[in-house]
Length: 345
Image: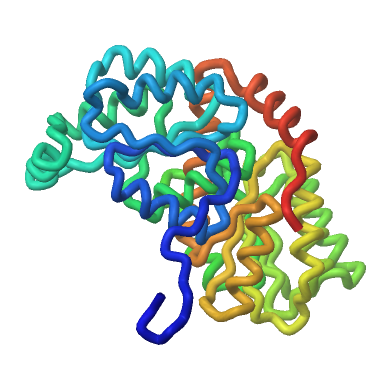
């Protein structure tokens, strides 16, 4: 009960879902459950291992490898005990399910804090980076990225290349997205000649404006309509040079209604390529738009940079699956699961 007299649920029950969490900090774990619930991200399992006197993160990873309810594993760590065993098990898990880790104790002061918290010996941060890369574990740089990329990997297939298509109704945010993608080592190259011609045909038919930029990024301008977003997304998914799409569907445009959300979602289901989206804003309509995309299986974000970083994680995981020869099996399993489940309306 607040002092205002309002009743508030302080610890809402997590939604059922496909994200499992292992944490070395009980307090952070509880806060994470609150965060995941507020973001409508469902949880399959939750394990707090503390100072790991009897059970370690490696034990739980092995258990979750065989857990049918878990698709993505997120881990808060301060140290790893039994490095060789961790690498051995982590490699088995990441060939089947993405593992995202936020590893604290990077700095000297942070390492001291970890030692006083759980008795953890943080170790060299460079060694952890190398070990995670070898095992296919994706390391998040901060808490926001930790949850953002977890959502992307839970909702979308990995990308098996690094060239990203951008579809936007706002030029500035489109440029911001390009900048962030290139900073992350991804590319935003022109479409194939066939795709370029398809867009020219749409202009000639009056289906999109002649002033629209269609060479990647595709900027449909502030005069965008639902149908223009849907048909453009379909054309971009078909392009053999495009490995993933970022949609910047800023809701402020007068020609947009809710139809484009359902349309883009249905189009995306036809392809084995990921899509993330961004709608900038904090008012009711922005929150509603992002929530609708999330419920329908396309991860949404508040900034172009967040959407780009999440796409980078999808590219990183796809690259790892190709490296270990597990890409085809992973996609096959995704399709089996998708045929049994339906996203919320």
